[in-house]
Image 1 (cartoon, rainbow, N blue to C red):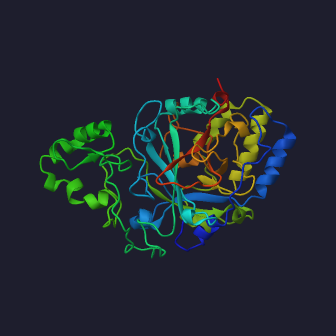
Image 2: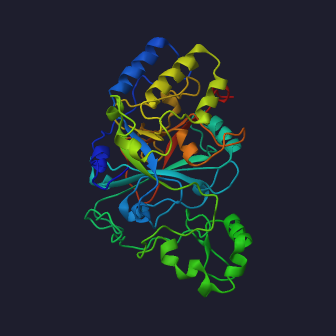
Image 3: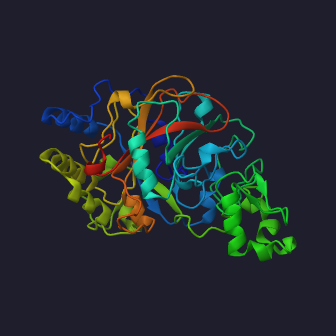
Length: 417
């Protein structure tokens, strides 16, 4: 989240305790009223931090040396060299390169290795793949799952090769210590380990992105590499040491870029006027509810879903523009919109690196799709919530480690087939 000192945002995230999953996690078939009430009481006691999106006042505030939380655009990689590559970068179902959704800066104070810590979420643009992904997650931890939503965790100690051990100044003078790996000139997301065979300057993460860039106009650009924006501003495009503005990419299909700001949910427990707090910078009015959220009601098949939805709506209505809910405290759980499609404890895998347990850390709400301008069509991307679970010990290692995302869709498609 925001670390610029205003609101002590980094301290707020660091204060969240590292814990295990609650032992009494519900199975999806359990819908007893008593259990639902217990969950609601537990959630009310949790220190939930809400994420809101705003257009950044300065583009430099989203560069990696500022350790931002952000949505859309391109990722601000924490470790700029040891990026994910190969199959982790593509949708396991259709093979298309994944698109950046959001990142959350969430350092932990428990050990030095998590002084800097960021979680990155990517997903395929195809709703058809998301439907397939949602069913794949029910296969109790096979050797290989086909997923279209992927989460990566990266962490660094205070003393590292990429950033100063001193806090950033929070202005355009901040610079990283190293340039980092060159990125794809089309998507600006993944490592550009393939060259244009003609100009030898433009780089790509995949043959598909090379073809798309060629057709869009690089066919003419690469005849004069000295005039190519990729050649003349490669340090900016590739996250270089001279990086002082947002990277330039050729793709026009990236989601709009926003900075993510955070507020404690408890601040919304008391009624606030429309001119107070976060609403100064609101992008939608507080009484406007996303059509995609409303459309979920069409899928409700019983009183359990209606009750769960009413409880969810009552909680969300305190701050309807929230796009993310963060809580890594003891026994924390997602705020599930509906009963169908909730995981039980056995559905959450162990960490694939250390074998330890995963704990819930944050969830992504469908309101984010409104800010991205995603239409509410039958084939458009949509979800009820995406819950992210991470290694309880935040185990150490170089580069980026896979974490786990649980996707909850509409009731009629949430049950395992």
